[in-house]
Image 1 (cartoon, rainbow, N blue to C red):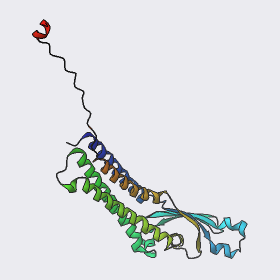
Image 2 (image 1 turned 60 degrees about the vertical axis):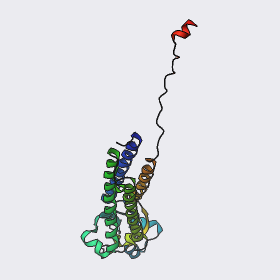
Image 3 (image 1 turned 90 degrees about the vertical axis):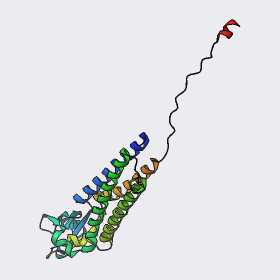
Image 4 (image 1 turned 90 degrees about the horizontal axis):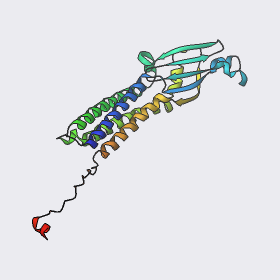
Length: 234
């Protein structure tokens, strides 16, 4: 049976693994990886809009890995449209890079759950194989962090190098051409980054579990002097 300190450490590590998996699920499911502003350049050029009239041709865009939404004005009032990456939009993007982001996140999610199961095992039993003990936990968490980092870097490459926002905003637009005014990584992206950091914390917790805390020592009651018959006679 593991010591109380080990049980506490591995239980805390299991909670962190659940937190990491939850962050990845939320990041995959939400549409706030990137937010930005877009300009309907075609409409602005047609009416030769000046700086004060540019607001009539601007809009907003936000998207995740599977879907998003776009709000824009091209001199015809406010228009809202839903963006779906699969099955058509992804073909006009760098398909391999976008799919890699999703695959890497799913692999990281799988290793997060594997690390959770190993933490629970170590909290309940003393492993008899090194792969089931701290060594295995280090390995699973490092792998999860590596795949999570690869997903984040691939998404950054898609946004910065392959102009992902511009391609998404112009998908299926035949009459108007949109340009990106500004874009920023939103909280869904940072959830993925936080998941990677969480695995680093798990490794620290596993390392701390090997610290041997001093056991509290009970004070022995002072020995009473033995009184014999000779001492009493003296």
